[in-house]
Image 1: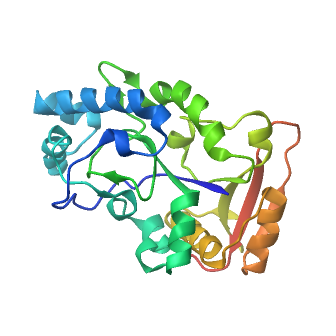
Image 2 (image 1 turned 135 degrees about the vertical axis):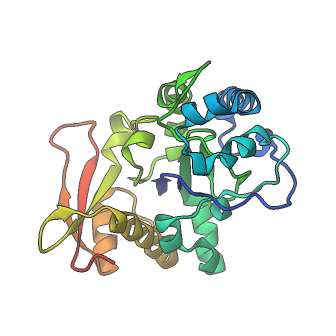
Length: 260
């Protein structure tokens, strides 16, 4: 099982660890694309602060993020699972998983990123600010920059098992599973059962809880149909829409009574 996650907008501080080593990151086939974005981002943020703030879409109160990006090559690095914070990651609670579940999370979780492309939760990265939706002056739209290298690397990372795609729209644009990989991919919506409306904030929390439940239980669904059964065994109410034609992902709706 491969679980695709969005990053968090907010991130923990880098701390005092050893600095980034790009060559140590998972998915080495993304190395050249990572270096291109890193070089562009550091150069932009080390130059005109106002231009950098405009490109990154940062408010006055987030001005300090520009200096953070300018120092990315020398800043301390920590496991990505410690850097990413926010609703989904709080609900996932990587730090409080038992040892076996942490090993499963390390194998299964892949966090998409405008800067790194995608990283494992054990990959050591510094704190940064670079969403997938921005356009860097020398590279253009980041989703477009990542599309070709992702198409080369991600099918191999997906292996021959289930792909559980929990990414938000901006990050999903960087790689769309195709062919037989798409046929064993499932996306998830979280709906408030009484109203059948999509929930927003609680969508992220529910997705975090789902991932935690799967890795804690040692669930190993091989395809979307088995995922539906695994989630139901874990107590979730799931409605599944099988794809209408070949080469399309399954769409799962998880219904929740309370939005918390």
